[in-house]
Amino acid sequence: MLAVNIIQGRHQDQRNPVNLKIRDTMHEIEPFYNWRHIYTSEQDERSPFFGRVYSEFEFSQTIYNYYIHPQWDDFGSRTLYLKVLLADYDEHYAVIELIGEWNDAIENDIMELKREVSDHFFKQGITKFILIAENVLNFHSGDRDYYQEWFEEVTDENGWIVILNMPEQTQYDFRRSKLNRYIELMELDNWLTYKPFHLFRKIDEYLMKRLQ
Image (cartoon, rainbow, N blue to C red; front, side, top):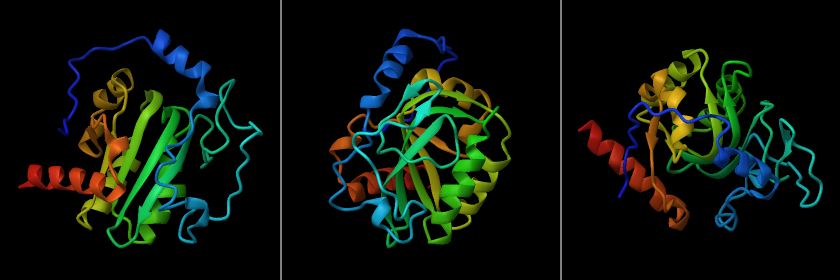
């Protein structure tokens, strides 16, 4: 069952033990790889990450003082990284996994994400975005303009933006800033078991029913 997660005003300490434990093992967290036989962004000529070369052994990228796995892609943020798991140009959707700290207050990560990634895919016909955020440890809000701009662009093309499985403590500032007006927050714990098109269809059908 696909459920929209509702938070009743709870705010967990950003230095909670769960976050600290994840930070200590961040170098072991790889992007989801079970769809790589279907799609790889570094081999997609329409992807902003086309031609990138990765090492399995050299750890160079960090979030603060914590190394992350070298398979993650840098898109301009110092604290947030991503991996495009799938871009389907026929069905007009992309699935992007995120890791790190989403910081709009200092880093303006939404600007980097939109300008360097989503705008690129939007020009290629992608209008529906699934952002996997279960490894986003914190969120700090800033300006809403890029969220509103992204929302208006995709909805004009009958598209949408969804954040899937953002941790509860991370959602607090996101909801407090009312950014869920522009990006839908959803939970689907078993998304890893889905084939990409089935995941897309499940989310798309759910959203279409809500609009009816």
